[in-house]
Image 1 (tube, helix red, strand yellow):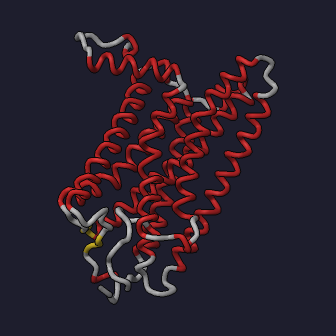
Image 2: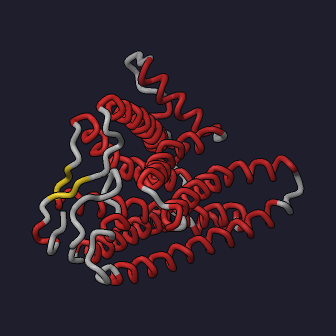
Image 3: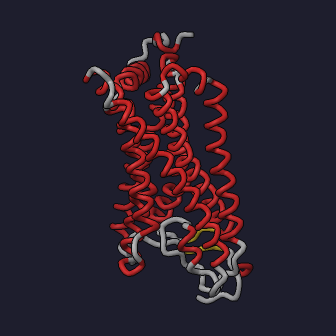
Length: 321
């Protein structure tokens, strides 16, 4: 259905996963499983770090923020998609679509900036250990985390305002299971999308700058670690960096696949699969990555789980002041 401008649009129609009712219900249960895994994993990480005073360090403070962002990003898109599959509905209101774009861009952008800050944390911890307490004190950590959240907020305001100020003349059907900027731009009038493309280019340059910073940080980290005299020291240093490096690689690889794939291979089914990968897989997998080789997180999670399921009426030791 063609429309003259965006003022006449009161709702958007999202992409359905399947035409058959049985497959829609199957998608609902699949998304529910992934969503619950993400909520459980990130919730346990947040609880463990917040409650265990041994984990009140810069690295785990940033990890807590990462879990909050992961929890928020997957909660922005997946519940609505599950509800649409369950009730066989495609509609999302204009305001709801704008809110979804704003929150998703806000949380994803803030996560990328936070991953850059976490690379700096690992750089200081390994390359400048004697200055770690000075460079990454409590005030500095709060300011850097706030800067990551603030930059994500500003990015979301800019992109949302730019996108939804465009006249939309190509209907209201979004070829994605959530409101995504590239898909909304396809609905805009000819040449009107160039303004948002300019904003995207600026954001891409900023993202590339963060990427260069992360690469240079790890270049210095690897050079410093390889100079360690003992293999045990090298192994310990690599074990603290490896989870962050895997998370960054997962984040960038899924995002680049989504936004940098050649238009010639683009199709609704492929776009849907890629969107699932970059919007759902990292939030669900990140807690597993960070807890797999981290003994401190494992011990804290074990205490949380034992107190939750085998509570004897007393708080565990790690809750004590």
